[in-house]
Length: 229
Ligand code: SF4
Image (cartoon, rainbow, N blue to C red; front, side, top):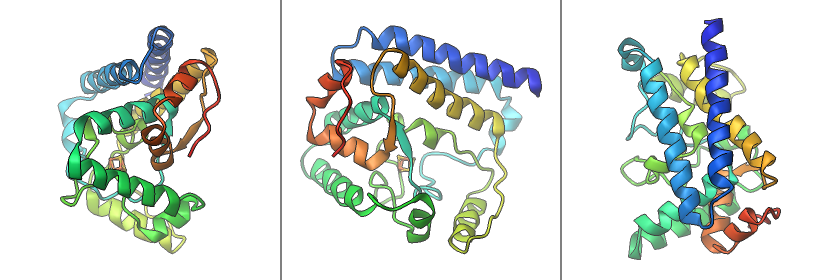
């Protein structure tokens, strides 16, 4: 496994290099959305090549499973910009109004709630729709992609046990986790190297910031520190 780990680390550094090159030439939120889409598609593609069909068959996480969508998720600024851009372009009318209302409510509700408390409160992600699907699945955060489990029931039990300060293990694919978490970390470093705001922030609050104030994208590209909503 050790050589494989080095290979994954090298791969995530490669992702950061690609990002730095492209982000330096980005001019708009749409450019950032396209770059993040390209990078995540690349990471997903590499993952598919590296995991054999036997390993993939054991991963239960897929669209429509929302067993873990009650946790705080951190996103990098370019991820938040890409998600806000996706929401604006994909939804309109009543759907857009409803998503924005949920984002508004949740950002306020979880603002001072730490990770353990959020799990205990079991408040669904603002992007989970009434069917239990992730409404932003194509652009979902890297850290949502990092979660793998072999059984949704294990996730439910693990989250329930957290509420009682206990720990139930979840059988996960570590290579998958390593690659997506590595991509998150290295993209953050790539953004820092460009002199841009490299902080990570809770998903709902970050996306709300860019939905409410689109001109902040220019601040990010202009290497200014973002003032989150
Ligand atoms: S963004 Fe999507 S996958 Fe991530 S927690 Fe929210 S609903 Fe779940």
